[in-house]
Image 1 (spheres, one colour):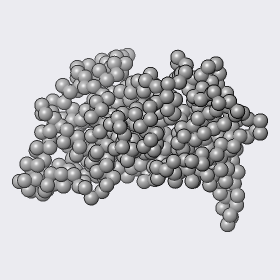
Image 2: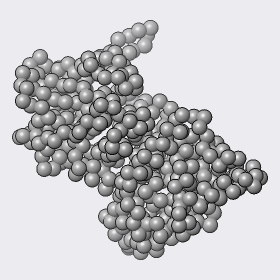
Image 3: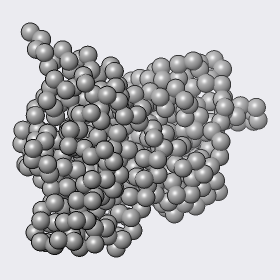
Image 4: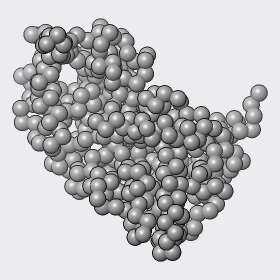
Length: 441
């Protein structure tokens, strides 16, 4: 039998951003990954106008399905000091011909040393003059040549041309890639299909896929899943620790949460250099969400151990799971941080938990001036969001109680707040009335 809350839940989700409202946040005063991107020149260039089929998302899904049912990828290893080391790995590309709408699978070998060099080029923002890693066809008769515009493993921007034909620019699009990943780098047991390496299928970002309808689909996906998280927290009546008289969903806006996710997945250096205020870089995240859905950030580990759309650290996740038991977060921190619905809820709770820590520090300081600084921040929604952003990135200690400011000691946190402010200024997400969710409170 459908309860009132379930009926509301299913009616609410299709309304996208209309779900969540400023009027919900009753206490609110009236004034209130990592995705490393391209070089500056590539960021600022105009997106291409190509002959994109009417339903590109359908073609992407078809390409992924083609690769899922193709043969497993190969790899070669050498033994050094009784340890095996990967030297070459096979990859498969699903290539769409935009003139015929045909999709074909092509396979290539990649050299591991070249992959290492390509990673260095990406991290240091250098130009890839040598087109590495080189995509070597598995068959000598292969007539498709791959150019690496930007390398990032299974999310690499690649261009395809037919050998000897100079008139095929942008005709072919890589709509999916099959890529081998070490089992230790996969959070879900069911993704570990091989003995040592497992094949995953992913729709890589490409400027050729960066189309308005794709961006719109990604925004819709993010709107729906953030709305779903807010509805879930409202149904469970999870109370805020930072504002004890409120529910968590009454103390934070969905727009802020979505802007934070875009901030987490956007490169700090390049967004500062972007001539459009970071619009294209922010849209890149939504393109990935549109083309990969719930697996968009399932396979991406950062070097610091942060994982998922919200880039939560394992210790942070475990802490909020214990402190908010009624939220019923997934127990396993790996799966919990890559499951997109669970991860969004976890991020919302991290914000609440960290803000409580800051408020405790303010209270324990017993400083009249510190209290005044904090009250001024609580009364200014923009300033409070910036503090939330800083402590989400660097921990509660990044707020300086006696000066009412964010610490500038850690460049990463300073850059994170700057990124957040740029993305917030894009006003990508509207602030709608939230009367539909009010009955759940």
